[in-house]
Length: 292
Image 1 (cartoon, helix red, strand yellow):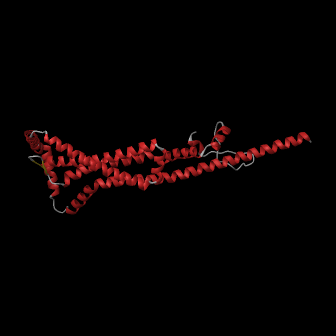
Image 2 (image 1 turned 180 degrees about the vertical axis):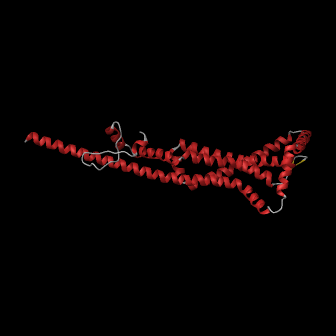
Image 3 (image 1 turned 60 degrees about the vertical axis):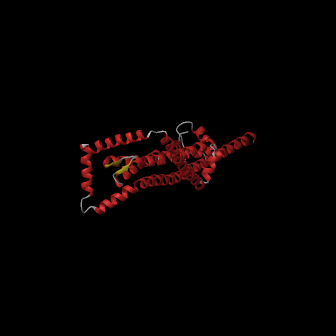
């Protein structure tokens, strides 16, 4: 049944002409009886569908996802612009804009890994919730415990992952020829020099240094640096806050819609009782008339 059919409708029983909660265009009696016979889960489902239609669930989730997806890029920009322009490789020092680019990639990669682990844990929890009603009920009734378990799983996954990567890197280095490492360093250093000497990159670096060293803008520089350094946390906090506020609004809208639909169902049931009572009185009157 379409949830929209419940709104702005009317139904008049024989004995209660001012009762007007429902009046579908077709199959009036069948639709009314269907609504009266709905169990609580069916009413909740309709209320939830109507809630999603009104609160623009997809729009809010898309906004939250956009902020989360932007977090690694913000972290990469902060790492590139706020740190030193020097990176130590195995045997070479990389400097200049290329070094900042490497730092930016490293910062973005670290945050990407963290968010990927958190996403995997969230998907795993959703999978078990869909597979087990008991698990779903437990997570729903114990949100704080569930959040704590998720954080613990996240920390454990990061710790184990870091140890695993460290061991793999250690074992890999044992099988790599030192000459190959030096050769790789030299090639990367040569590429870094060519990149830094590129005309566009060189002009951009000079312009950035000019702006950075300009007098009178120190307060703005401090504010910009603070905003950039906190940008990953601000984006994640904004995403979580948006989801929390939207969740509260969705819950309130659902409660309102559910109460309205239960009220309609109750009034329709009472109207049907009144109608049947009238029919019963008419039948009794006819029986009395036949036997008198």
